[in-house]
Length: 121
Image (cartoon, rainbow, N blue to C red; front, side, top):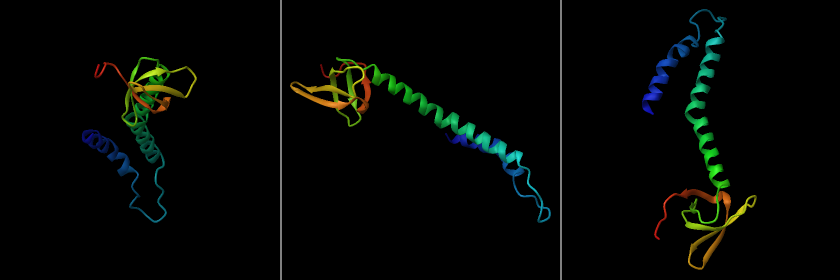
């Protein structure tokens, strides 16, 4: 991450210097285009580094939530592990079996991750 910011600084330095106020008289106008290019480039960097990966992760999580079915092993956002015993399409709540004879009704959105391998059995 440190390398990315140092590379970004090296690339943006000419834009920053060209956007600096002119050393001329009091009424010297600054060029607008370098400043606009700087902010455009900055937005692209932020989009590529932060916004796009977050959207991709959010879409993946929504797909996992939609595909939940009985028998899936999951972990909730609060850290509770269990097996889904009832999940219907279009419903916000699912029934999670956490121990023998213990079932919890939880929001579908509170499921954090689907476990691929069985644990403890």
